[in-house]
Length: 165
Image (cartoon, rainbow, N blue to C red):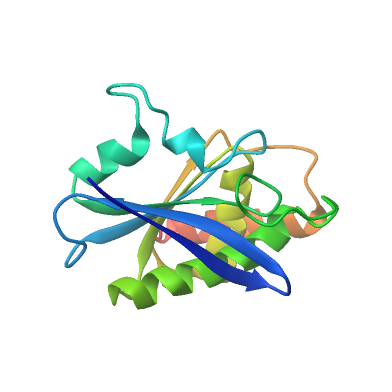
């Protein structure tokens, strides 16, 4: 396995920590970006237990795998916490996706999110469907979300019905 680490500037004074993993070479492979939930960072996808590491599994399946620490988590910029919303993080993720697309020379990536990360992924899919080849949502929140998020979730559901996911 080959690992690389990056910092991506996503907003004024905010940097995301990004880990890349793949087997062999990164050329001619599909990319997948993993978004963590609210209680963890990228390590959720990189648990060092044999046969239980999502990043390793996807890399062995031929993907270039990326996982981030979103704002306020892990090695990414610590903020006040008031700006850690699904909407804000979706805009941050746009910068990360653009970085991955440039790095690999691809037009689309796969995006997967768990819990809070799935809320970010749905908002992202609604706003930037042309960036995505596939969308996977695990344990998405289903209540107590903002009106904007509810509207964006409906748009994402409509897009999913047309084959984005």
